[in-house]
Structure formats: structure tokens, C-alpha cells
Length: 398
Ligand code: HEM
Image (cartoon, rainbow, N blue to C red; front, side):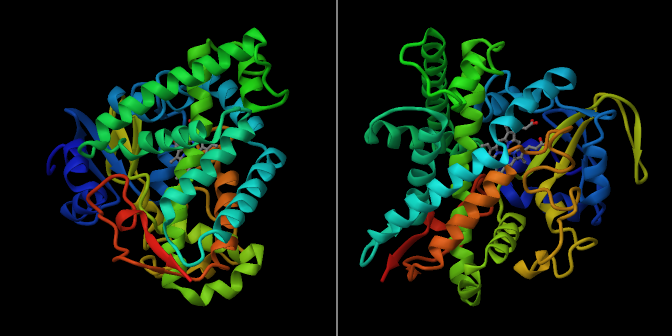
């Protein structure tokens, strides 16, 4: 063991797990500790299979409260198990079904196109632009009515919650402040919709959470789950900014992105390679065996997400950016885990993956038509969680 994993993640960021992996001789399974608790770190398909076996791994209490409550909110679906998880998850999957997310993604494409039309001859910061466009679109789609200034403020606060989850310096207290503000706003929106004044748009996310399938949740918790749709949609701006960097780095893809299938391949490769979720954690509820390690009840099970997405046993030329690897293939649900693995209907895999794929596809479509040049070095700091191309990728647009 080479030191507490939580401390390593704080200190080394995305370099922590690769470092530990090397220290353990490149093993796919090794013992560690997280805040004094015994932990087993797993990576690769077999590791992901164990992690998503709900007879072995549950979620309640696995993620330390200071992180879970900041990023997901107190009582959120992420930390639930069994029947509570199943019914809450059904609600998310219904709120994010194909037809509903198609509308939102189309709006994002259209809004981004309009916005990009105003970039000519200017310098813009890609990340800031995407936060505003995605944020405004998801708020309106969810049924939140507000003026442009308040909408912009809300988008920035949603991004601030994500920016601070890794505990980086001043971003951490800023994230808590943003979380407090956003929870209060979301709770009020639900309470207003329940009182009927102002009436929420029928069928909107706010209405469904207030008086539809979310009616059984108290206003605070329904608000937390509303934020669990708004916040991650804004978080797609992290992947979108890496996409803009990759599009600049691999310009041969520009001409191909007229084709929706190539856009999906490009977006998948961006999600496979860009650093975002460093790890996922669950708690073993029964004894199990993986490789030559015995997992004991109470152990934390940590899934190395980037290590799985780049596992050389599964991915040919894992370190290269090759969107064509996804041509005509359905990614393996336990090998490609940027948004979790397994089946979203029965496990914790992200219910927003279809939406993410569509938003990135629209972003690729629009950016492929924009002639931009980064004005700074585009490298990201791998020791900071979450990270971005330097300064959010300022670019000069011709
Ligand atoms: C770049 C974009 C995104 C990334 C990288 C991402 C990643 C993830 C990951 C890793 C998980 C946890 C999986 C697990 O615990 O096994 C997750 C869960 C979740 N995500 Fe996403 N996500 C993204 C976008 C979205 C979007 C757009 C939405 C909704 C609009 C969303 C809503 C959720 C929810 C509600 C859960 C909890 C699911 C559960 O516990 O059953 N995510 N996401």
C-alpha cells in the first residue's frame, strides 16, 4: 500500500491511480485505503463487472458525505440502493427518454450555431461559451423561467459546483456556496410548482418532479434531483471543451463531421480519453473473489474509470486518439465506462448518456464549421480534478 487514496487523489489528481497501478506492478486489482477504510481498487472489464454486480456492491455510504453532498446533493439517487434506487432511476430514465432529449439537443445545436455566428473576428473562451449555451437550454427545457442575467448566473453556479468537487483550492468553498444557492432555488421552484403559482409547464422536468413521478419526494429532495439533471448537462461543457481541442488537434476529422455517425464516433473517443470522472466507489456487502483478491463485506470497491477506458487488454492502441475504433461497433458496456458501466435501467450507469452523446454530436457539428485557433497552450493540468484545457480554451475565431 502506498498511502491513502483520497490523499493521493487530492495531491496527484488524475495521476494518482496510474501511479498506484504502477506501484502495484501493473495489477488490475490491488488493496488500498480510503480515509482509513480498507479499499480494493479494480480496473478493466472484470473489475467493472464486479463493481456493477449489485449482489456484491452497494452504494449507500460509499462516497464520503463532503463529496457526495457537494456534487450530487443530500439524498440523491447516486447513493441509493434496491427498491429506492429502482423507482428513482425509472423517473430519471423517463425524464431523459429519447424524444425528450432529442428536443434539448436540437435546441443546443441551434443556439450554439447562433452564438458561433457572433464569434467571427473575436477571441472567445470555449468552455465559458458552452456553459452558457448548454445551461440556458437545459433550464428552459426543464421548465425554469428566468431572465437572461439570472439564467447565466445559474449556469455559472452549476458549473462552479462541478469545478469544486475535486477539492481544488478556492474552487471548493465556491462550490459549496453555489450548491447552497442552487439547492435553495431548486427547492423553491418545486414548492411553487406544487402550489400552482406560477404553474409549471405541463410535462416539463419541474412539473414532473413536483406533481408527477417526483410527487412523493419532499420539495428539498425533488429540488436535489432537479439539480441532478441541470448540473450534469452543464458539465458536458468539460467534455465539449476537450472535443474542441481534439477537433483542432485532428483537423482531418472536420470534413467527416457532416456525417452523424462520425460525430458519434468522435464524441465517444473524446469521452474515452478526456479526464473527468477519476473513479467510482461502492461498498461490498458480501464476500467475493476477484483475481487473487478476496473482497470482504465493508470493503470499499473503487473502479478506476480512466484506467478502464484505456485498458490495453481491451483497447488497441489505447493511448491514441482514434475515433474510428468506434465505427460500426456498440461499445462494450463494461469496457467503455466514462459514464459508468453495465445497464442504466438496472444499475447506476448514467441515465444522461444519450443526452451527452447528442449534445457532443451537435457541438462537433457546429464547431466543425468554425475556423478557430487556440491562443494559448492547450495542455490541461492532470493534477487538478476536474481539469480543462488551459484557461478553458481561449480561441481566436477567423
Ligand atoms: C460528460 C457528461 C457526463 C458524465 C461524464 C457523466 C458521468 C456519470 C457517471 C460516471 C455516473 C455514475 C455511474 C455509477 O455510479 O455507476 C453518472 C451517474 C448519473 N448521471 Fe451522469 N454523466 C454525464 C452527463 C449526465 C447528464 C447530461 C445527466 C442528466 C441530464 C446525468 C445524470 C446522471 C444521474 C442522475 C446519475 C445517477 C444515476 C444512478 O445513480 O443510478 N449525467 N454520470
